[in-house]
Picture 1: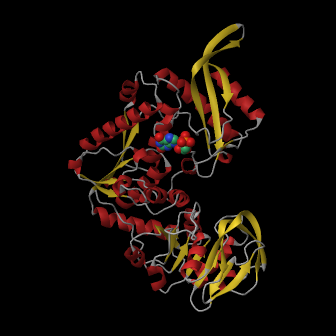
Picture 2: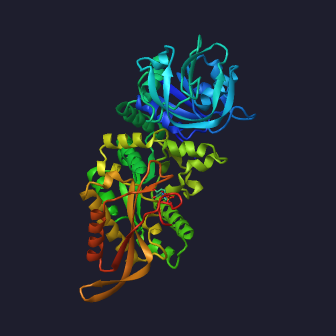
Picture 3: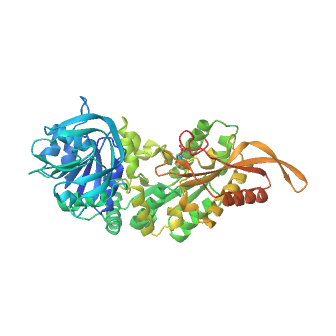
Length: 521
Ligand code: XMP
């Protein structure tokens, strides 16, 4: 399958050269928040790719290595040959210093957290910024001697050379992290670099972007038919809405109802996309096939595999029924591309595995359309709102591909699914009523594989146990359990036990990730 390379040729670009920092994506997002397009490439990328990108400026990210060791990452030669502004951040500063003849040392005490920066010399980088400001540091190495031709700009108590600039060339470097919100005026410092020093145009705008993406899609598909697996999640929904604007009825979406969706979810997706937005959507009612394949399966990994495989079978069967399809659209977004670009199998990233649309027969020979593959999640959300997708759908908590299948511990049955759907519905409804939904990152109910005794009136009830899970997280890699108010939990628990006859007890999960995961399976 060929993929659509997004065409940002005519706009100004800032390249973020990645040395492995946890903040690399954040730097690129910050640049885009200033309406300038940015792209991330690994430091060891083929040099012609850097040249072809034709950036207006380059930001060198931080990274976990030490330039004091041999064989650690270095700035490729092409960066120095392009005659464009360069900003080194943290490791980026250290390797710039080292490569230009300075001296970097490892210090005994690592500096992590807030530090006061004192600016000694004027620089375009610090234009309009107070002489003293609070910055965020995270480093073990630091520049000890300035490289040839550089002057000192600023220092902190522990880092005498915390910012430097070349006397004649447009090279700047800072030891602290302007991309994190803990650095005061971090945004102004980045803007000074991007907008003043690089003089990049602010032409990364959402309305222009939608119009240009529509043109690109039309050009790519040339009136042919396109297929899309619509999950109801943000990425596939925005892809569907965009393609609908571009090619209308030439797009066919397949929405697989696997019976493991939230209560009312299938109807909601069909209502939003088919009835309100007039999209061409086929619903594949596959509840029974999934249940059949999942019979007697208890192991979590096994369940995921069976759900994934069944999804592919169902999707393929629907796709084959459609005639003359030439393209497959996918909601791949930029973090998916970046995360997999370092992997050995570059092709593996072509299919977004948890979308489970990987099994289409080779003879269909579909080309890929991926109009969101250079966008961050917040940009995708903004685009979705502009395209008229209801805000409630855009701001929904994430929902795993295997759905309620990984929230029913043990074997999945129709009855258990119904109980969980009801409990989940009550929990989410109450979160919305109490104005707490947006304050947690993800919340859901889990059906446990044990029964417990309860009393209702005079009657003893031996019934199911529901666990409630709510977490706060930025990136879903780590998470804290959400401290929901006791009165709120009491209310949810009462409603669940009173309204669902088959539930006798409700418990609240107080585990953080790590060591627990967000989902239970
Ligand atoms: P864990 O449980 O790994 O979850 O802490 C992190 C985030 O990923 C979601 N998740 C999945 N999403 N397919 C998906 O599309 C999956 O198989 C899957 N498993 C977990 C989970 O809901 C949480 O947001």
